[in-house]
Image: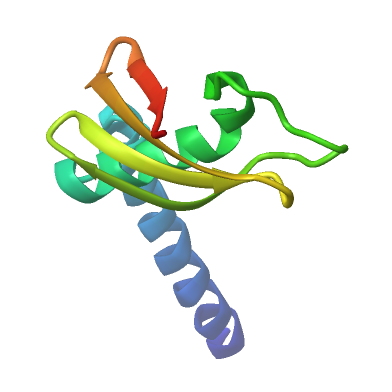
Length: 116
């Protein structure tokens, strides 16, 4: 009989804790947003850098040469403006751009001009 009690008490405790978690914790987790927005400064900065890195070939008014693929080497952004340094392994460019960030539309590059 003692062996049965020694086994049943921990099982009952584990089941009770699991039930409490299901009743009280799970509904709150389901009601919370899936992911909180990133901090304004660093989240937007990383978002813009990533966006430029992924879309530099489409944003650039000149195209890659000799089979190269554009990649960014540096991005500097502040207050809706930025500078991006990029190259294709053969030619390097520096471009000034302006951008907008919104929760609804995400990142939008509003102008992109290569420096002479």
